[in-house]
Image 1 (cartoon, rainbow, N blue to C red):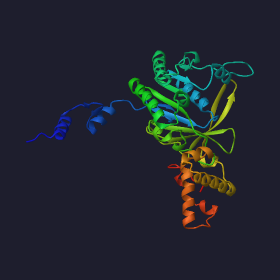
Image 2: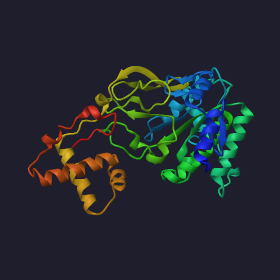
Image 3: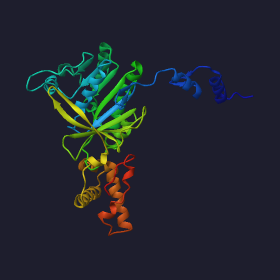
Image 4: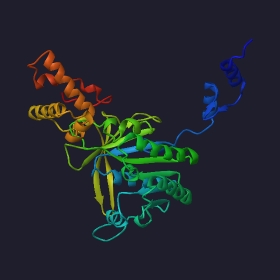
Length: 354
């Protein structure tokens, strides 16, 4: 009887009590996978069920919303029970010092010694192989400080052209390899393109979102309240470990507070995201629709239009689609009719204004 290689491999795998490697693949039965995984402890919650031990997590937000303040607050909290390496590409040491100094008394905020801050020395930058070199430097710094919790602020600075998914993907693969090698927990801070306060936060707001998003185990974002300039909210966008607790109907509400030498996000409760979005009147809706359709006529892509107008690509698509339907079926359709979109789907994709 002729040898069947598929059946032979299957027989060999099934006869194994343990696992078997085939190049990059490790094969185990599903039951064996469950049994071996059950012997390891469950992931430890690092910060309010937003980030778990062993995860690659992403925090993103628009500029000047307090991403770095929140990330340092997370690092400060976690450093009470383990070493943390904070790679700061946002602030100089002087800017960092001023942020955490009481302006009246000159008193400095006291962090735990288990929190190490790293910043790039411009005199030693290797611009030719910057991304490869910084990965090696982060690895060495983490080993030197005994840190398995690494926060990188931010991805845009460390990865040139990171808004291009392919480039950011290669950078993330390098970080993922180190994470697996050393058992790191990684938090990556990322920017968003300019976005409208009228729309809820979605994964599409993350720069280079489609390819970059898939690398993260969990993703959460900071939004700005249109109701109160001082308020911010934190929303979960992606969850693998734990529960999906802080979606659009239950965002965490904060106020940025300067408490002497400590600037931080002060918890204010929970809220529905839609209560903190900007309301759009009929005039603004019509103006936005006209701008979108004009740019479409000029041959602009959905991405280009979204970036130019500060809205998401999905909202651009919705406006174009509604326009096409209106032209074919009901030319006289008005703005009021457009408001009938089911807003209960906002957790799956952008709430459309049209």
